[in-house]
Image 1 (cartoon, helix red, strand yellow):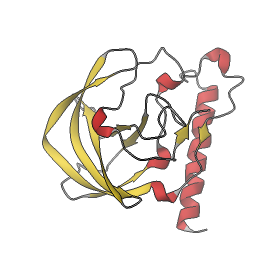
Image 2 (image 1 turned 180 degrees about the vertical axis):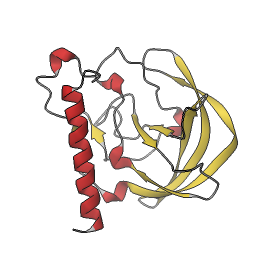
Image 3 (image 1 turned 45 degrees about the vertical axis):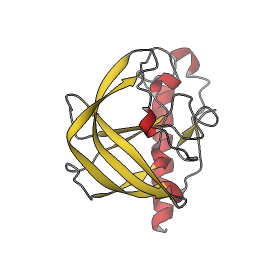
Image 4 (image 1 turned 135 degrees about the horizontal axis):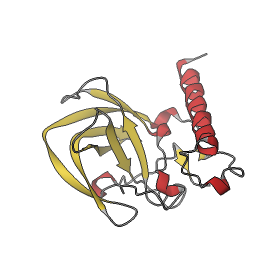
Length: 181
C-alpha cells in the first residue's frame, strides 16, 4: 500500500468513526428524532491535492479578533499564526486562532471558499490543528483540507458556532472534506 493509499484509508476510517458518533452518541448534534434516518455525512473524495505544505508566521503579540456567531453573538479569539500556502499555482493565507485564554495548543482554522453555500455548509467549515509544540516563524505545517468539517450548528440551531472572519475567505474552490447533503 502506498503512503497516499494509507492516508486515504485513515481518512475513510476517521469519517466512518465520525458518522457513528453522529448517529449513536448522546452528544451528537443530530436531533435524536433524526438519528434513525441518518445515513452518514457526505464527503468529497479524498484528494491529496488538498494536503498543502504551509509556512507559518507566528504572532508573538496575537491580535484579538471578534468573530460573529451563527446566533448573532460574538466570540473573542486571538490570531496566533498565519499559514501561507500555494494551491493550483496561487498563493493564499489562512489565519489560525485560539480562544482566550487558550486551554491547549489547538489551533482553530475556520474558513470559507467558493464551495460555501453551494456544495458546503453556508456558514463555512472548520479545521483544527494540534501541533506537538508552539509554532514558530518559518515552521512547515501540512494543512489537510480533506479533514475540513461543518460545525455543529449545521445540524442543529441549538449550537452557537463562530463564523469564519473575512480574512479567512479563500477566493478558490476547496473540494475536500465535508460537503452538504
